[in-house]
Amino acid sequence: MDYSHLAGLLFPDVTATPEQIEAKYPARQLPEGAKVTRFAPSPTGFVHLGGVYQTMVGERLAHQSGGVFYLRIEDTDSKREIPGAAENLINTLSRYGIKFDEGATVGEDGQVTDNGIYGPYKQSLRGDIYHVYAKKLVAEGKAYPCFTTDEELKALEAIDKKAEVKSREWTENTEAEQKTAMRRLREFTMEDVERNIAAGNKFVLRILADGDPEKKTPFNDLIKGKLEIPENDEDFVLLKSDGIPTYHFAHAIDDHLMHTTHVIRGEEWLPSVAKHIMLFRYLGFKLPKYLHTAQIMQLDENGNKKKLSKRDLGANMNDYTRIGYAPECVSEYLLTILNSNFEEWRMQNPDKHWSDFKFGINKMSASGCLFDHTKLNDVSKNVVSKMTAEQVFDQLTEWADEYDKDFSALLRRDPDYAKAILSIGRGGKKPRKDFAVWSEVKDFIGFFYDELFTVTDTIPDSFERDDIKKALALFADTLDMSDANAWFERIKVIADDLGFASDMKQYKADPAAFKGSVADISMFIRVAVTGKMNSPDLFTVISIIGRERTLDRVRKFSESL
RNA sequence: GCUGAUGUAGUGUAGUGGCCAAUCAUGCCGGCCUUUCACGCCGGCGACUCGGAUUCGAAUUCCGACAUCAGCACCA
Image (cartoon, rainbow, N blue to C red; front, top):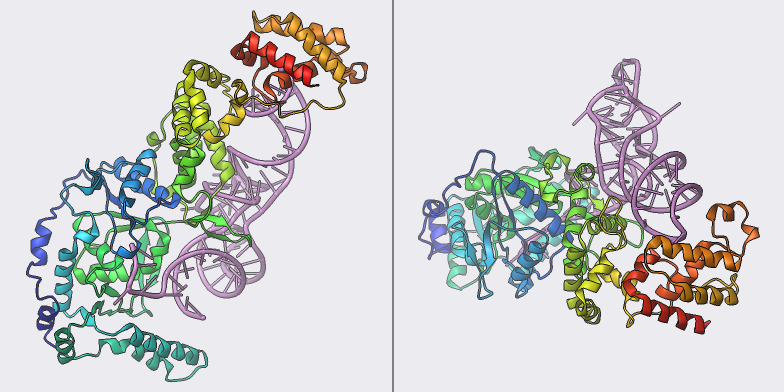
């Protein structure tokens, strides 16, 4: 068959040559060992935790090596595209400290544009380029058109299925039968093509696979290690009937032209590498290095691991924003599961930024880990505990502006007051670790605001209401706010007066001898003033609330008994 | 079904033939400290999927089984 005639028939409008295209994508001038990585999502509108996870790998690898990290939008499936998705993606990743050096970016007009000379970075804009290489493959007899309709394909598949059933029944001729079914696609004549083209029929372009699945190709994945994968024998689609490339074809061409050195993608692509090895070989391209990252998993209702899916809480990055995780918390958590030695490093370097950590490919796990909310919150509490009151105030109010406007109004009404509250237990060697997320702060500090103050906890019935009232009355009468010691001495006196132990050691030695202890007196005051059994240091709390409001609350509480 | 990947305490892991009756973190339990809580400190609980093989010796190598995950589209 005259393949160059066939190529002309299929791609009459393509005049450029691969050489002309290659000339527009010169080798990158980068230092020795610099890695070029990319994030190549399809713009489906939401950013997945797994996406941030993968993105961190690419970003770290590129930036730690003096390389380039770029963004390419894989919008070859127009059905799934959601407007504004690219912008959302860039903004979200930016929140987590992920910045692209090159690639698709959002211009001042809000439109997606190119930043860099290796574009366009949107696959939908690269149609001409793919067709040049497609034509070349056809001319070399490595790809062929397929005019088979969906229905015909289904019929072919049915034959294959039947053959499979037979093969399990050890019928002798099944293998041949099985092969012929899909292989029939390859059998066509130039006349068939000419007739179809003349009739205006659409075709898909298929690769002419020369692999033998009985043979294994050695393949080294940087995360999974040395693998042996069966050669590809499937005539997979390169160009869809609308002329748009499939992922496989676009991957080969784009990553070659854009000089990607390390392809980082989810392990769901691992079964496709045979196809990609074949494509790169057919095209004469150098195969990049691959890192197939393990997936972040979730337990389903049967207790089985499964991929963290769209609907699971924690999959969508908007969840984190809404719940109020500081971005650093998520980054740090991701790093703990990305590189097992990160936690160790963190303990040795408590004050450094995570980007100072030396990220290593060899420390990445080959197996998928379970998403652990408890661990995330632990990491988060640590991160938040190290922030200054100022930082907490800024992030908290920014969150509240969006998700709890009433609360944000209260905080902003008197920033100094809010910061005084947020300073409690902050700084020093043993900072309080009260909050993991901004949405829970209100529960902790709400009582500082009269608008939010309610008594939620009750004093156990084992205490006489009369004693409580007396204690609170004495407290109100003798309140000394000059300093913490003087303040607490008063409480002790009250305890003694009412038959409660003022000395904890004495009390512990013989609890039966007392109605309770100074701890219980404090508890009465705490419940009266904060409405809760637990709170930060009471004297500090009262100092912030102030004398008048404290006394007011004590009086009201006492009356309610 | 076929193909591939993965399998160390509840969770995330260290571990690449003897240093492993298995490391660290988190979790849970108990204690100390603290007027409460939180923090911190101390102590405890808890694991090499199973079966063969190689070896003086295996968590580590090989084979098999099992389990889990993924892929098998004109989706990425």
